[in-house]
Image (cartoon, rainbow, N blue to C red):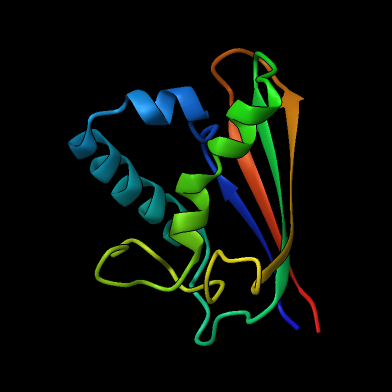
Length: 126
């Protein structure tokens, strides 16, 4: 089973930020996020069929739990297989459903202001 550790050079937006984005800004952000991931990590030839995903989001302030978990939508959409509705998927995992992601965890972490980043750890399970 393949394991992936993916670093994104910024903290992914929280739920409130994501909901307040204009649809065109969301599309531009998703394209930029996919390129940030692709810049350092080559997408695999075959996606994981079952996995666990853990996200460490580093930022100056600690978010509340619903904002943190709701904000994972953008990163999960970049990890799944590309489709017509989701052209920015990179194919690390088959889907973001409960059948594929057996456990999704997230942890807020502190860092200096302006130095936020996100680390996503994907572990394949049998």
